[in-house]
Length: 158
Image (tube, rainbow, N blue to C red; front, side, top):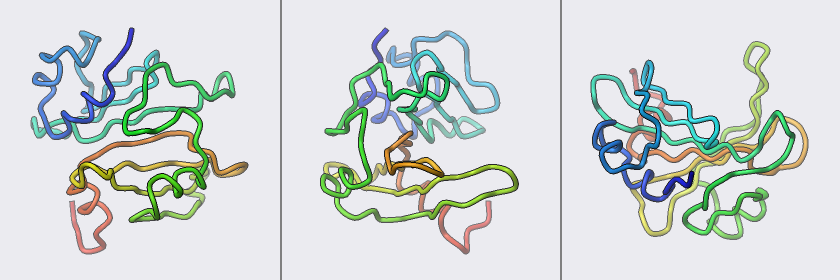
């Protein structure tokens, strides 16, 4: 089954039913606690509570079980299934935000960089890298820039 990733990204901010009605979500099960894991599709959709809408789309490029890079759908905006940090910088420029790798309790979090889309400054994507090893993108998360700005604002209280 092929999923239109660019079509899904264009639906950021829209309610679940609107996205589903456009046949962009092939599963009949609704999100639980705002989350819809589509493991076979290497996708994870996050919906804000109270019907606000689709807030994040995460694409898993690296399969932890098989230890291989595999994404079953076409990537939009010139992105590739296997990308290095250097490749992203060459094609998308400097990131607008950056988070260093860190350990939170026993969880190892690799670096993360936020990039703008050249054709749409309302949508950003976050490239995540492994905690150890090469700087190869293991996942991409697309979200509205407004949501990211709120979350990364030191004065913002949810």
